[in-house]
Image (cartoon, rainbow, N blue to C red; front, side, top):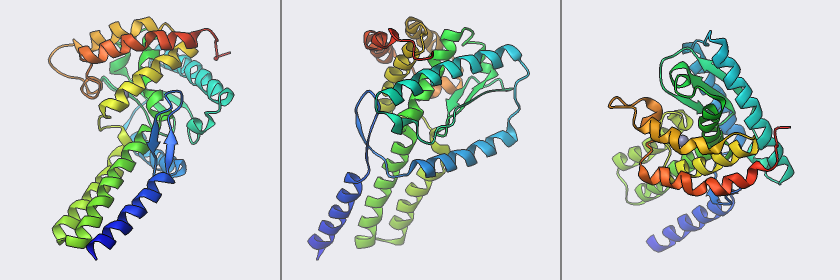
Length: 270
Ligand SMILES: [Zn+2]
C-alpha cells in the first residue's frame, strides 16, 4: 500500500515536472516552470498596483531621462536578439516600463511583468548610463530568465512533497506547514524582496553583461561597480544585502566578460 502510494505520487510529480520544463535564453539551462506566464504577469500587475499606491515618482528629470534612455536601449536590443534567435518565449508577458521613485532607498528591480523601478537612492551611485545599464541589465536578466516563476515553482514542489508525505503519515500540523510553504512562495512579492539564490544571481550577472554588450554599453565598468557597491560601509542598503558581491562573485563577473564581449559586435538597439 505504502509502496503503491509512493509510486503514484512519484509518477504524478515526474509527469508534472516533465511537462513544465523551460530553458533559459542563451545559457540553455533547463528549469521547471509550473506557472503560466499569464499568471505571473497578473500577479506582478497586482504587486505593482499595490506598490504604486505607496510610491511617488521622482521629480528629477535627469534621473528619469537616464533610466528611460538606458531602458529603451537595453530592452530594445535584447528583444530584437530574442526575436532573431528563437528565444521569443523569454519575452512573453513582459511589457517594459521604466520609472524612478522618489525614495532614498538604494534599490532597483524588475518585476516579472517588465516593470522596472529605480529608487533615487541608487541613482546617486549609478550616475552614468553605463552604470545604470549594469544594474538594469542584471535585473532584466532575472525577468527574462523567469527566475521568479522558477523559485515559486520550487516552493510549490517542496510544498507538494510535504503535502503528499503529510497526507500519508501526517498530522494536521505537518499539513499546515506544507501549505504555509506554498502560501509563502506565492505571497512573497514574486521575488522582489526575497533575495534570489546564488545560482540565479550568477546567471543574472552573466546574462546582464551580455544584454549590456548587445546594447553597446561598456561592460568593463561592471567588476569595479560591484566592488564599490560591496564596500559602501557598515549599513547595508537593500540592493547590496540581496546582491552581496564577495570575491567569488567579482571573479565570476570578470570570467564572463569575454563571452559577453562577443555580443557587442552588433548593435541590436538599432
Ligand atoms: Zn539579482
